[in-house]
Image (cartoon, rainbow, N blue to C red):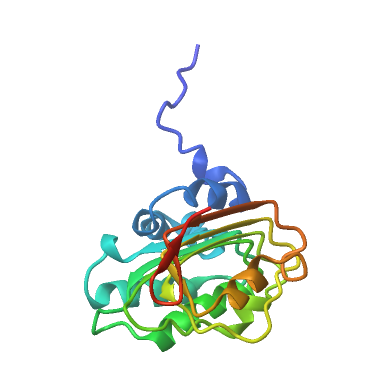
Length: 202
C-alpha cells in the first residue's frame, strides 16, 4: 500500500473565489500576506469582498499606505462589506483621503458600510454616500456630519448610528423616514445629539 502525502497543500488548489472567501475572514494584514505564498495566491487578496481597516492595528503613515495599497490592488469586483475605523485628529491622515476611500467602496457597490471616524470637527463624507442604491446595512459613528440636502437609501434595511450630532430634528427625521429609507427594518441609535446638548437613544 502506498502512503499518502499528509503535507499536500489542498487549499491552494481550490478555486479562486473560494480561497478569496476564506482569506476575507482574516485580519487585513494577514490577508495581504497571503499574496506572497505562491503564484496561485498572488491575486486572491485583490478580489476580497470584505475590506476592514482599523487604524489601531497599524500605526503612523503605515496605515495610510496600507489602505492605499489594498485598494490599488483590488480587481474591481463588488465589495460586500467595507469598514473604516480611524482617528482624523492624526496629522498624517486627511479628510480628503478618507472621502476617496469611501468613494472607492461606493463605486464597487458596497452593501455593508461601517464608518467610525473619531474627530471633533465636521466629517465631510462623499455626498454619493447619502443616495447610495446598494447599501443594505449602514453604521455611522462620526460625531458631526455635513448632511446633504438629498437623502435616499432605497435598499437600506439596517441603520446603526452612534455619537452622531444632528443640527435639527428635520435632518434626523428625514434620515429615518419611509421616503428616504423605504426598506428600513432595523434601527438602533446610541448617544446621538440634537443641537448641542439633547442626547437620545432608541
